Length: 453
Image (cartoon, rainbow, N blue to C red):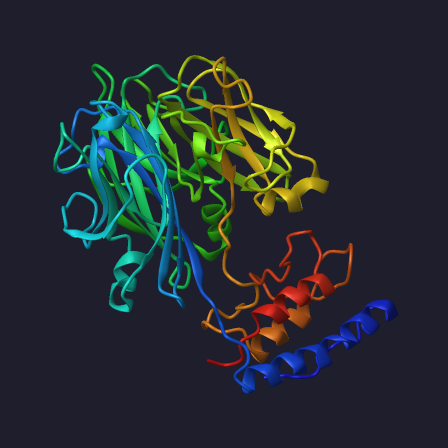
């Protein structure tokens, strides 16, 4: 392992900048050895609540979604769940829980009670012994009602979700078909485990093939990257190449089920982890609407694009307008930055200003659906992004240490220039995603530095 900097090919100004890295890194090493740097781990999990995930499925048209932030140091799972459309009406809910531990298609007991009503917001202080099962996608949300005491709508809590329908096809197709998928990723082993259910297809349709496609956002088609097994459910694992991981993490892969009636695909679902539950509580001021919705996003920072799929139900009346607003955090209103197309569901791509990307990544945009009763907005959903893994573990050994620093300095090129040509293949040291590897990237690397674990 080399600990000195190789700067013989760098310009003088860049050499001076790189020369500042060594003492900064030394300070990080000292803090680590002194036990003053504590590594924290957080992940974002999501859930697609629907009748088809119940065991057995129910005929309910209720829908919802949830976002979960797990802190594996504090052993907490924070949740925000919005839903609507129970068959017996909003007051028919009798209880709601997180259940575990079971995969999709299997029932399990209660492990945490959820508050009644919409939305459900809180924190589960889980036992350490349950952590592996949570991260493995073996818990689920279940909303019980008078009509369905065992549960009316359910959503498996997993790394990614993929609600599937004909509307998401490009172009959209007219079908009654639908489906869903849940996915668990292991970014160290480069595996994506899946459980995909085709709930229904249109009259006379028979599945002819099914795949995961990439790299593409909503409204864009792409080629096959992984064949899926025939039938339903489709259960398996994709050992994806390292180069595909960024596309998976940013929502740029999708499931496509092809049929005899629609050879290009009858139902499609983007595989996403960027999910914004929508409800009246998030409006400013909050309102008492029982409506709910979900905004599912994909992000491409290289081309400054955010794509979306939005669905909702239970509003007091027809939509009068809908937009992405920004730039403001939760609890603050802001102006329109992108108009949504009319209709429900809706999909599209926002070509956002590059200068506003930091605001977007900081969660300072939100979806807003306006109605006559609530002209300022009936349901709102803050678009917040997963925290992601700390920048720096380039060798994939679970820590950020001097061997990773060796690779970082090989990539260092300075501001507003591409990473150095000495950067090892597959190493992404552009921590802030601005196209160069400079001191701002080093500051993020330094914050992630743990030393050898």
